[in-house]
Image (cartoon, rainbow, N blue to C red):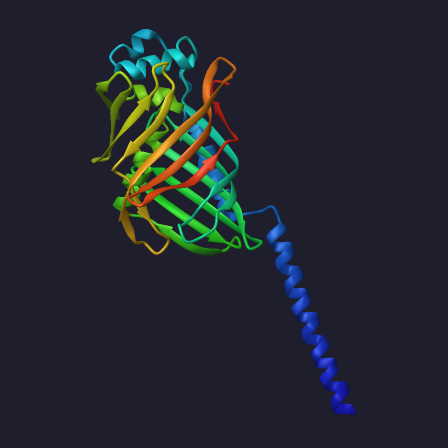
Length: 289
């Protein structure tokens, strides 16, 4: 009898310890503090504080040397006569995001900052996998790119770096340049005319270059960006060369500017397209707001 009571007591102690651990984990997951998000906020704040406001507006003279469809985009979107920006913040909510073709889509929130004076970009992903917090931190500064994934706030699942990542980050910045159009006028981006609805852009920085084709409609709406200069870099570091494109849809007037409100990022596999980032709920803010 004494042995049975002792065993039962030990069992209840084990249950109590497990319960305490489970409660501790739940509390930890729900505590607002995150080392990854704090690092993101700190580096963004640092670069904002170091950014100098551009006391100028977009003029027709600024865009006169650009290819015809790019000039038309500036006019159609309403940027002519509005203040030039030194950085932008884009916030995406409830994005359908696919990490790999074999995995189901996640719902993520995605916040990014792009800066004009140099190709600089930071992005923070916030989501959960099976109820466990997952965060991502994409960074491109001084020509170095990285993509970090953190599970449960403390477990680093991957932290990809290297030349392919540098190029991927550089061409991603290029794809978004017309949403922050003061970047288009910087010397690190050069343009080539193609035809009335296409223009080729090349971005060069720290001895690395990447190019892509922007497609517009006849009105001047930006429809898409396509490049061969971005590779898929999986969590295990494997690299696969696949055409990549971004689609811009559903233009609406937001203040003085016509902006797309639906953005899709697509891997154009030979066997078919994979839309791995699909957001119809995002906002863009400039430091001029």
